[in-house]
Length: 252
Image 1 (spheres, rainbow, N blue to C red):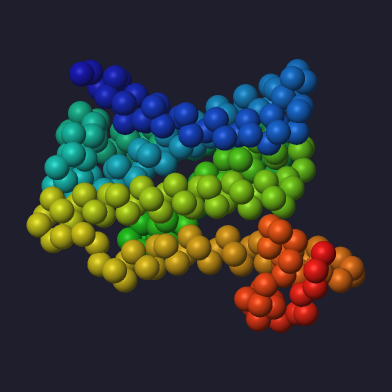
Image 2: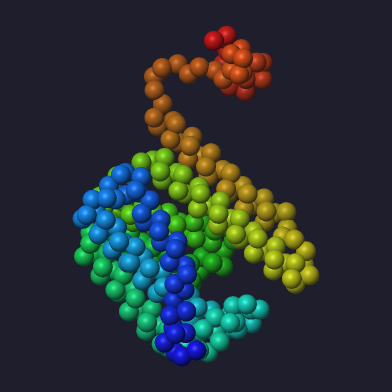
């Protein structure tokens, strides 16, 4: 492979499919068919592709020594020596500047969203990826920012439930991926499956975050009407419901 083709491969264009999340908010709001808003959404998509490729190059350049010891990552263009590390840094800087320029020229809110994504991924490359649980939250937040970028580019307001569903979907997906990777590495090294504490920490994060956010959403929007106690499908309340909810359940 030539240096140019290796550089394109190092930008990981196959990962650009993740950036299709920028279309989620405009499509959900039904404004994607409006010409100006479609152009702004496409600009957000291009900006995120450039920003993501820049951070991929930065991350691979920083991890070049450790990647060369990895059974699969050593085949990446930078780790394999097909792309010089200095060139990777230069191209990464160019891509980041281009992403910010496109974003801010489109809309200032989009520019700040891209800037937040770049700050997050840079922190991930230098620190967050070495901290358990925080690395999962950081990667999941990157997906959320992609969805937010589509709304920022088009001026579509984000509903609380859209944000919650996007956050939880990203969190569960990344947590599952990390658990699979940890199991694969542990098994390959003959260490057995991940410890129970790691599995509990990961599953606990995924379980408590949705419950807490939904509770906050419900508490903030609670009406003054008395809440009906839960009932069975037949319409009668059960003793377990009364003891759990602390209310006097009655027949509907």
